[in-house]
Image 1 (tube, one colour):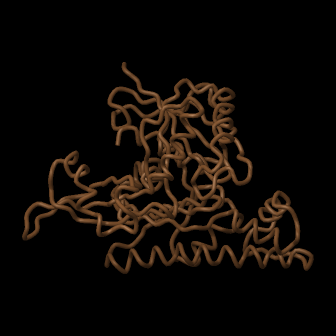
Image 2 (tube, helix red, strand yellow):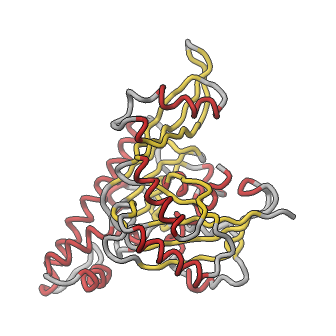
Length: 354
C-alpha cells in the first residue's frame, strides 16, 4: 500500500515543534487513520522568532538541523504554518470559476480590500460553500493574505536546515484539521490556541471554518508581567506563573505576581469571549457548543475555568491525537497530559492534502 510521510513544522516564538505523520492510500482523506510516527520539540533562544516570524534564520536553521538529527525524522518534506498580525483572513464571496483560475485572479479581485499591496502578499482562497445570486453562481469562502517577506523568512530558514517546504498553511486551518474529527465535525466549536505571543481563534461550524482571528498576546505576556512585578528573571517568572495560576489564593509575598497574572489573563480572555460574542451576534441561532484549548499558554492553571465562566461555554483541552494511530517507537507517555501542545504541528502535516 502506498504511503506518504510529511512533517508538520510549528515555528513558535519560544519553541520549535514537529510531528511526522504517515498517511496510507488516499492520503489524509483516505480511509486509513493517519499514524503519528515521531514528535519532537526544542526550545528557542529569546528573540530568534518574534510573533511567528524568524528574525535569526541562522540560529533557527541550526536548531532545526539538531532536532532532525535527534528525533530521527525519516523525511525532510515539511508543511510550515503562518499566523500572526501580518496575516489577513476575511470572509469573501467571489464569482464562481475553476479554483486554479480563481486563485490566479486574486491579485486583481482583492487589491482594494487589503491593507497591503498585492505584490507584497501571498494570497489564497479557501472555499467553504457555494450559492446563487442575481449575478450567478458564487463561491463563499475565506481570503488569506500573508506578507510575502514573513512567509519567505520562515521558508528560507527551513531550507537553510536542508528541509523542503511542500506547503505553507494558515495556522487556523491547521487547528481545524487536527481537532475537528468524529463528533466534533457535527458541532460548532471554538478552537483557541494560546501560544507564547500569539493566540489563534477559529470558529468551526460542522467542519467549516466561519471565523479566524489572531490576537497579539499569549502566555509570554503573562510571564513578562510577572517578571516586571516581582523584579525577577523570565525563567523564574515562568515557574512562578504556573505555580500561582489564576483565581487561586496566594500569600502577601506573591500578591503582586498574582495581580499581574490576573490583569494580563483577564484582557486575553475578554478578547476571546468578545470573538465568540461577535460570531454569535453575526450568526443568529448559531451558538457555539464547546471551546477547545490548545497551546502552551492554555496550560496556565485556572485558564480553562476562567474562560468557561466568562464565555458560559463548556471548555476543555483539545486532544489532536484522538483518532490517530501511534507509531511503535513513539513514547506515548512523554505526551501524556501534553497532547494539546501537538495540535498545530499535527494539523500542519494534515494540510499536505489541502
